[in-house]
Length: 356
Length: 177
Image 1 (tube, rainbow over the protein chains, first blue to last red):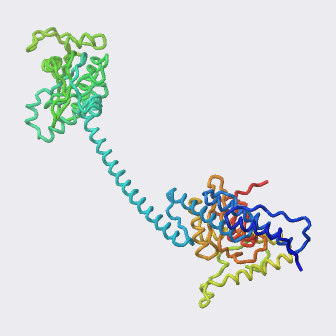
Image 2 (cartoon, rainbow over the protein chains, first blue to last red):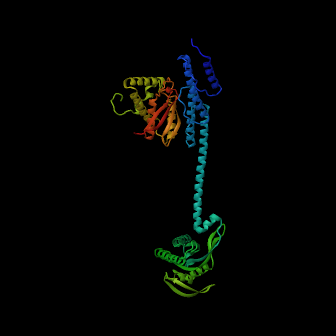
């Protein structure tokens, strides 16, 4: 017959009381005098249960605080295994969520009852929303590309009409104020007998001819650092030293004039239709600015322009006629022929030179 | 095919035969018990003849070969590890091998903790304080070898047989000594 002391029963009762009231119990002190019997065995198992249960409590409490990396204790208690399963599921969910947040919507969860359905449905909706946003982004990118292309075309068109600095001003300020340029060289050319010759040529051919010749003029002007202002019928008007300002604007203008004459001569040597130009150059100050609003051009004004035009009209076929101001700047660089003074309407007597 | 002596593996997927053709009435599936009957009697006889370490090595290597072939012929190589795990999950579930889940995945260092619930080899076995899924260890190592071209150490740290409800595998790249 097993004899159980009241103290032992009290110890066990107190431990169970603590358990069911949500408190921890420490392992029970086994009386030294207790023989190796069923009661000692009960003490031993009870203490093992207390230790394992305390570990499971710590684990479950850590889980409830969201500490998913808490290392679970070893043991076979059903409650421990259940919490370990829950931990495994939550860790797996965390990983799946990370994959989805990284853009991989193909992941799903299963075997978690209604939660699986809800989670997978949420993923599907996220994917649809993401796809919609992606398509909208694609459309926006496409539209942006087209806008960018159009902008580049407009920019190219503007560059063919306006100087780069003026375009920059328009882009940043929305307008470009007229500007005074102190020291520039103006070039004017005109075809000799153009009106008479044009009467004998088909209009389409005539335009083709002008276009082809002016394209070459244009190329030479740009090559020498000048800018074409405009063409007026068969007249060609260009300037050196405006954008940008340059010290050798006169030399560059004369160099361009020589190249233009030479190019035209070469063309005449090979072409059925022969064209001859008069060229005039003058150096001085001008004002440049945008003229017009709906149909605008960048134009250059001032007495310098008028005198350059007079230099051209007082020139001769395939000759480059320069004013005294140009001559003073280029006389040491180019061979010239002094023409003496020639009367210029509105200016009186003006000294002129041919560049040889 | 099955009677030739060999020093290198000659296994190829086609050796599984045309099950549909061969089993028009009984079909391709059979109970898990039958699978375990074959595996456990085989293991039993191998342990008796060769001992536990040699049997474990054979099971690991066989699992590794199976994992490689499974990846080549069923899962197929994926472009990244996330897709690889997803495809393995889908296939293991479809073929009722187990429910694969990821507890930890460090893609930079290629270190993982995977769990397999309802494992074909061990779920429902008596709790005997042993990790028994050696074949699974090899199977996972084989799939990873085929996917990444690297050898992996796969160690089962929890098993149904050791009292857990899932099999848990610690996986890291093999360090050659």
